[in-house]
Length: 202
Image (cartoon, rainbow, N blue to C red; front, top):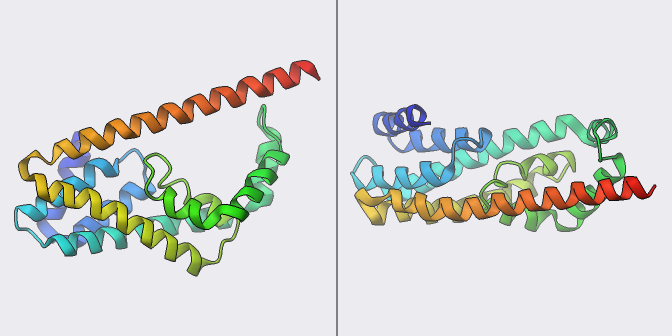
């Protein structure tokens, strides 16, 4: 990860604000590259005068939207029928779970995309069900842009304001990310436990 971060820093220094767009597109498509690290770093690079704060936010949002769009296309290509077929082959899951999830997304898809873009661990993944559900592309891009703009502005501004101490943003947001991951893990454990108990009863 240190090597990746060094490469991103050099990229942003060499080509300026468009490098921020490339970095955020990569971290959107490849979640192991954390936005809570990349974005404050982009703010710090702006603080050093390599580009303006506004251009960093705008290019970061462009990159986020492009990355999210690629994942949306992947979900759209995969399609709900393939997802249902895959679910039937997985243990403890069936096509009915997919149907219920898609029904929920159909009711709350816009808010799911908007707020999902601001939740660590969910930011990238939320684009896939949007594509599977075939959410209108214009609607998807609108809510993705708004959510990405808010998230990017907060983290880049934090790195810009803290200057050389930009890493503090990563520490605080990283702690929040860990809480989200723990909650997701707990939800998965509860889900599996309920399925196993239901299977035993049957």
